[in-house]
Length: 469
Length: 123
Image (cartoon, rainbow over all chains, first blue to last red; front, side, top):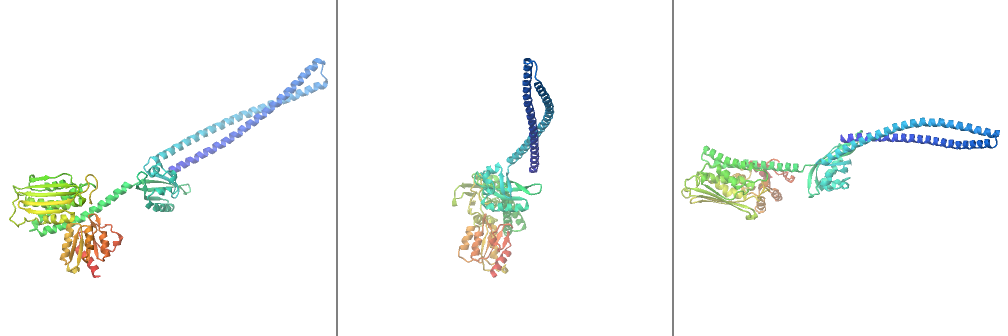
């Protein structure tokens, strides 16, 4: 659109310039005519002067003769008369010529004035049009240079004739570098063939659109851009050039990619969770006395699983659940006496997301059993949960060491393990080592359960990415 | 499950989720198979495949603690051990070289797995 308007304006300016040129030619012709007439007049004046001088000479001669000889000879008198006649004729001629000249002069001045006016008017018009064109070009340039896209013009398919300052600033190519096919050098080498092929296609379809990576000069890294170009056509529809822009879509693509990963991870977790639920149901069923017993215990375990999902769902991408979060969540869900629990460990130990669910289930089993049979279910017993963070432990990884110690529990008769601890023990002694590479111990001591769990934790301490998940 | 044809077969189980691994192993034993593993990570899987004891089949979780199990799959193919992939979701990106490998979605139906492995075994 803009290009068309600007084209029309260019045509008009060219027309005005033509007209001014014609007027100038006319003016020059008129000036030639004036100078020709002026020359005529000058020639006549010279002639008149000569004749006047002759007449003067004759008159003088005549006076001398009249005084000296008492009269002129006839021949001399006649000569003088003839001279006088010639002079009169010449004077008349000159008079006519002068009058003609004046008329011509006047009309010439008039036409000159008109011509001058027209030239001035056209010149002023041309100036205005030029100013309008310049201001329109200035607006166009401001637009192109102010927008975040990298803009370019291409004279034929793919052959660049101009690149915007943004292109130069981003890629470090100067105008000469980017011309022709030079701009390809600023693309990621892997994308160059695709980009030139797309231009061949654009020649046929009249449309160019492609995503490719353009390398920045600042750090040499390549970012994804979406490049679009549209052809500019003349009145016959022939493509005269292409105008194109490249828009930075790198962040958008990264966001899409991370969303894709998150969705895949979510589906992976969901499927695994279904498997876990199925397995928990099976195991609970096997150790349940009747359906009512099953219902209570199954619901209890599902609620624990739900709490874990709640913790995990609150996280943003780089967050981690901390162990203090996890233990607080689990203990506050208990119906037992929360006051008899001492928590002793540093806040902010970040768990690997992949470990949270199984660890939480283990803690839940310990806590449930403590309420039912142990430290949280008896009047004179207590529970201390201590933990320490070892920044560089086994395998060079950071580890969390958890110590669950119940005291003052009146244990059942020797050898009779409390009911319902089967699944808890399996989680701690088998699932945690299997799934989380944890080191665990589980001992039924004389006055309660003593359990230790050591598990590798997230290497990150701040906002950075940690382990998988 | 005896009809699945797994009686006496040595089946490797590679699965990072304990409960799923335990369940598969239990079902396999009930079907008369000998369970090798289960193992939860790629290194453990590679060690068991290289371990020398013969394998009649394998059940391989594609995603092991965020690590892809394809190296183990390549090794199984190299040793002509039939196997199936188990995946958490349908559109898991599996390289084209495994196009011929059966895939089972979790939670897996062991009879299907057994059929897939048994079918390969009988041929």
